[in-house]
View 1 (cartoon, one colour):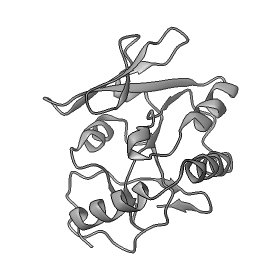
View 2 (cartoon, rainbow, N blue to C red):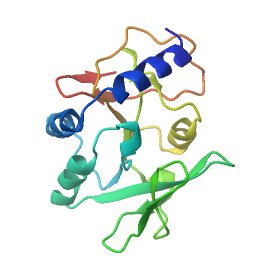
View 3 (cartoon, rainbow, N blue to C red):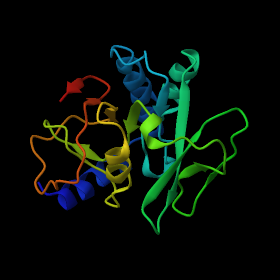
Length: 187
């Protein structure tokens, strides 16, 4: 399927998910992450879930990171420039939803992309080659292209991989892993 077909298909699938399913499967994804050898780094970028889009609840992953005393980095989006600015998440970080219902930090200590070692990537769909589909604006592809080449890119998904996504661009940044409640894909 093409990107636009998959985007529509997975938005519909997500819309049908219950709150209980989201919580149970989000916890299962967090537990799967513990099986990966990724915990020796310092700076982890995590997305804050858009509950209206029925995204994975990343609170469980954040609890793991806090328990391991890791630096968590969250982003603020600029829809005009299609850029994200990254901030260290601290006890003092004020978070508000923007006009797109994306929870974002109001301000804080800015962290450059090159300092981030692991990125947990939101997605709608992905394939067995590690290509992903987001909401179509390109925020994450732009951000990931600015990270160091050895930055780990880990997708989180309720669903299993598609065989192949048609219409991948050279600018699309592939994942290193994708973690589901039952499977860890390595690319």
